[in-house]
Image (cartoon, rainbow, N blue to C red; front, side, top):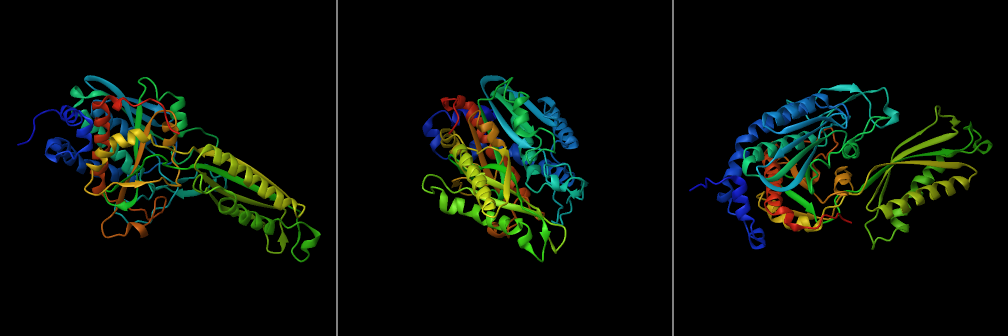
Length: 453
């Protein structure tokens, strides 16, 4: 026999004690949640496909934001728009007193030309307006190659499920739909940092924030780290300056090209030979672009190196950047050249609140038929870290690799062939719904308000 009690009341009863939290939850006692998600799923799939087919770049998510705001209003949720340019914030006030919790989704797509062959594949092209100066003025394809279309659909699904029971909801849920997670156009501000500057963590102020990210993995599988989640990311541009001369007599000038090659190789000894790998996993230093010269028989005056540094703490970041500068400078000076590096911080390192992860882990385990993978973090970066540096946060992964494809050999996020299995959507909705309801029903588990580390 199915229960006729309200969903939050059922959750409150189920989660009333640590013992209940530690045991399996009878699926029948949460049948209403599953029924609500099942009913919502076809519309969520249709929504994701529509967003996927019409992607927009960072700070330009005008139609996507309108679509999100319209749906939130249909659900009876209070809506704020044009936050940090195109951001949307929905506030669902429960009928009972309780804490405030936030759920984050991103809105933006990537400058990637889609090659999936899907019937709803993107064919959108736009003039590039991102943060890579070398691409300025070019026409680029646009694709939801990182899965933000899935995040939007999942968080709107959570909004729909919770809005059905708002009268008995013990607290308030803030839905944050953030633009420009992948970076902002040249000369602009945006992303999580601007959302925070414009008050997204105030009025009402959430006591915690939750988010997920899709990626390769068995469809519907969940993964989480008890502490470190994502890496800090800094972009750098190094300019190696020598003296231009004829390619037939290099001794008449100073050739910056072999020096640039030595610098790239020298940088790789920073993680492998200079860092204490016992104290913290190694940083990652990658050069993604080298630009020099205009003709085969002219040794140029300069070489430009562009790359990224991924580090796991502020102290490690500061140390690695200093080593980058010193290595480049000394190698260049050895031949009478010079090297100058400009570093632009983009994302801080991300961390989960360990106590909150432990409190919510039973809810994740009950959300998927597959085992939850406990990880130690990744080197990808995400500005969800901006939120979790200010309030306790939990950020977890959702596997979306379609059945029949080996997740270890599938196309990863940011690939033009990245694929997403729609059957994973209801698992994401269930997981975020359950952790949110558990947090509200248990008054935040009475955890301290501080963040880690």
